Image (cartoon, rainbow, N blue to C red; front, side, top):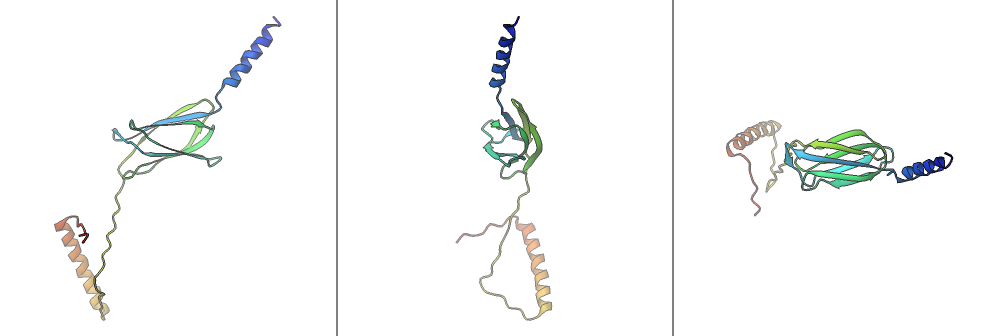
Length: 154
């Protein structure tokens, strides 16, 4: 019986040494069921601020192995889509956690800069105010009638 105790202790020691002291995060990124390739996945350990960056593959999947157990914030971004966040994700030793991100179309911001070929000089504040109002109304009407305006590169 006494020979079984050292054997049991040795087996327990081997099992403890064989444990992987890290965690893995796997997941998918899609947009209404469509594949999203190249989405940026940023995984930040909130305790150490260590960051791991990976991209989703051609199947919309990502895998982040060898993460230190702890609390993580995960951010997923892709041009043209809203950025998504998952906060306070706790990863434990030998855990394989799974997240699914469903991207939504983001708002498009467009800036138009208009420059005059020659400076405009106006002496009357009332004329400036009246002209600005007419110009604003004219631009609104033109935009509604014409749709998007593209600049001539020449």
